[in-house]
Image (cartoon, rainbow, N blue to C red):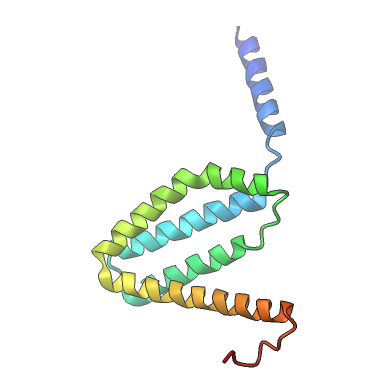
Length: 142
């Protein structure tokens, strides 16, 4: 009886390992992103000094930027990972939002960091669009 149970366990493990041909880079990214956002939420919840909150927010932005370089095999794979981590992302987002509501000064710092990062992204997109049109991105748009 015990032997049959062990063989069954070995078979289940072998099948599950063989089926794990996922994107380890994507898994690592999502886990790191969730961990850094949890760290930010914790800093806000504990009402840590604004420098600590800012550092946590900057770390979260750095991790998010790493996610932009993930090599997806297909858009279906990307959607699969978004679905896989959707609940965890929602939970950590809700935690961070609640923590931000309890620490308005910390929330302002986080907002400043994120808005600055968004502005950099928008400027880069604008420059890329200008290059695509053959325009000089160094010139100001009038």
